[in-house]
Image (cartoon, rainbow, N blue to C red):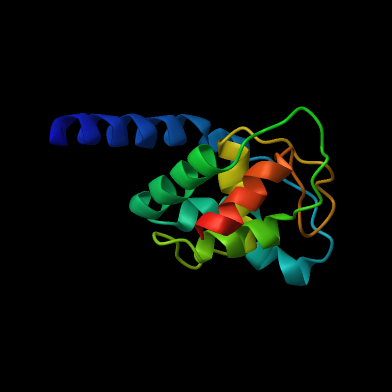
Length: 130
């Protein structure tokens, strides 16, 4: 059982590393005073353990949909995560990075707080779990 957990963790670490190229492009920032807390590249400043916990939470808690029906922002999602049992403080940019790595699409990358193609039901469930 322990080896299975270790193997899955290593696989997730490698999967995250393979997708970090998604954070390398330059995203527009509404104002440069917000850039230091809102760039998705901040995900790379998290420890490997923090990256694994955050991406695992996104992958197992939130559910993608084809449309952008939810008005829930990256800022709100980060606060939901922070209130979970394994949650910790993350900057808005780090949450944006985790969402990109997990495969979510951005509605309008020119906004400070991004909205994604997330199921409203999964957001409601995340509130209940947190």
